[in-house]
Image (cartoon, rainbow, N blue to C red; front, side, top):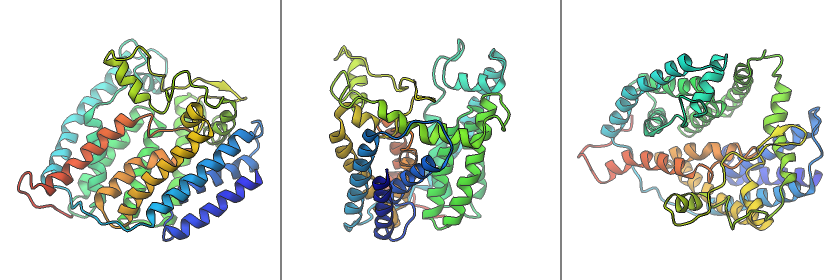
Length: 394
């Protein structure tokens, strides 16, 4: 435990210095998050079992290979070849957001009218997850992605000219999180907002820290509303133990290389696609993992779960390297001033920040792919002069 703690400290310092003292460098975030979680595990009062050697060993591999590979690619020189987004496409995305938002309000109305759980918050949450007799699919669609993409673009170019747009799109994004009772959407909004504003030099580190503190208490409040409990009942310490620490002990229950089929967790998209096309008879695994009591009931096992479950420690090391190279390259381009890669990094940011809980990038790869495609359209429209419109930087 002490050795892993010292390893995280060393990699945090190394990543911070080599990332030009940028606090949101991939290596800085990764080593910093695990350093924070290990510190909480040692200082908070809880009834969780001690961290297993299996977890500490895998974590050492993950943090080392992720940080070093990200720093390696950050050391290479790159050029920015993508310009600014098309003003016409920005306008189009904004008005699509305005036109489609009322459909979400109708969904909220119907969820409240048709709900039978006895709690308005539960009615909204169950409907959003598609777990009621009237709503059998998760609420979403291409218009929701356009809300998020449009918000980020307008936020990056925030000025007096477009501030009304930013506030309107921000309200749409936040209300979507509130009316679906989703803590992850609030975290996603916060992550994207912080990263975009930080790269556009509109906020500093102290603002990030104050914002993170406010977000934490907002999460506790949302959890209490969802559980129809008092805020005192869902106290901050139990919330922290459940969402930040339980995954680390749950990881110790995984049997390495125990997947029934080769790479079924890592390559779930392949299994899902081939199954739907009738090419394979192997059904894809459920995205929602099984709950265990260790002793807290949880179904999250940290970001290392799919790699360790499928391939053991070798998988952890290989995919830590792949992730490090990917995030390091995107961060390097963003650090060089590319608006497109700033927005890509903001889009992927949640998947690295929540690595203490679970793996998001591969699990939701089709969703991320759609977001990146939509995010690319305004920039490529300018690049190929699709509408013979010049780009707008404000």
